[in-house]
Image (cartoon, rainbow, N blue to C red):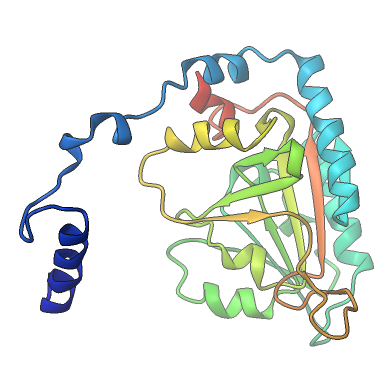
Length: 254
């Protein structure tokens, strides 16, 4: 702690009636820093029936529609791949004439096998491997980024994307179009449930909350999409059971 910091904290202690050099540690305020009991919330998430989960999906879709999230519900990875392939073929890059696509290093994205689907087309598919030193350049060149958000929040239509090795936040922020692939069971009711799941994750680095495409109305109150991030957000909801080894959010609730 430098002199300015010590001086500043000393003034605060004096204003609070404390000795100028007294120390305050967390153990002195057990109630303030106590972790909340989230057992009931975790049990609720883990015990949710398929019908209840489907209801959350409908709430998410309804709220997401008003935020310009284009949603697709599919029953298999092959069906998800078909949606992604159609989007890649039908959309055009904004800033160049070549089509580059980058996806997170995630089993649900790998299952799409996109590298097999463009053998005779001018489409280059990249994966954001943690060991790849050219990930930044590949991300900048890509007009579509594909991610697998950890959690979806129904009541605000928010995708929560964690930054992890092989899953940088740039994938959902730099490309003009963001495609998110999320399993149905990853959708929770509200932020309280989402934060409960996030508290159970160790080594949490950073995360991004995404509620629709980037937008601003700063200039003459005209709404513009894509000003500070993707101009389009497409959500593909996988309604099939989780594959073994997938990092489902519901695992954290067990």
